[in-house]
Image 1: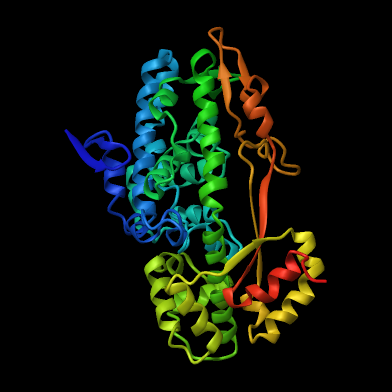
Image 2: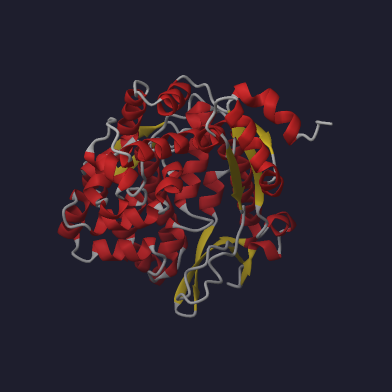
Length: 434
């Protein structure tokens, strides 16, 4: 029997009620259900009103794409490879579904505040014996929590298991590019998913398996896919209004933390309080108690704070009155910083909370996992092509398009400030003063 779940990106997502039983059970774990209340794109709804989609839908879509990829690899591979894929089927599906459990409220934005990556917290949630996902995994196979942790930490073998979850050709990226493109209305993230999956191959190399694309037919699909991500970062994920809103959120959190440390009474349930001012004692249970709804409620409550800075920042954010921006290099900002802060202060704005330099950057195609000094060699992220004789070649070696963006960091820095300061700051930033 099948369970069919309708989805705006993948239409009918089919799961076998017997073979995919673990994934269907994990959907009901409270740690997975929490992802319904965490937006996939954080606060990008500020710029794209349709971007309200959740990490729950994305995680489910990622598991479904993993199922499609598994079925394709089994059908297109030699019997021995197909058997190895089948042996890892349940592990792959579970990991795909659970890969985002560690996200904080507002997704990646909160990582800048707590200074920890969500991947570490995903592993903590899965290994915590008190979580429902841990208990469900152990019931299926006592080895699963540790095995999934190894996959997420990029140290699991065979390597194709890691690459299908986390690489430049993984099902996570395949789903979020299409999903974000649909919900933002920006078509930059579209690529030919069916063609890409159809030409995926597993190639045996030195006792391991490498994930690759058919060289004759898959190169253009790979280029389109990587460039889709490149354009989404440039045009959507680094949108100036979303980035400015992010600086406001960080200012709000820093102000709330400063008030709590000073003994001021503001709304802050214990998990939120520990995240703000006592992170060393922040637990998995605390993490799982927080989501976008809790932070959103706190921001509404803080509008009524007696502290004028916290109240004003929350009121601006909640009403969509987002800081303005102007492009400004970090080098020039450091040169102008004292003057900028003085002018903001003269107009009654504390520069610690009302001025911010935001730097956004991304590598569309990177070799970062090839070279980690002092660490065990990790599974590479690179995309490989394979010819009909089983010979592998790295994509950028044969693609001028990908070679042009390989290891090339694309970035932009912007000064973020309240619109009331525009007439004071812009002449200085743009060098128009005599």
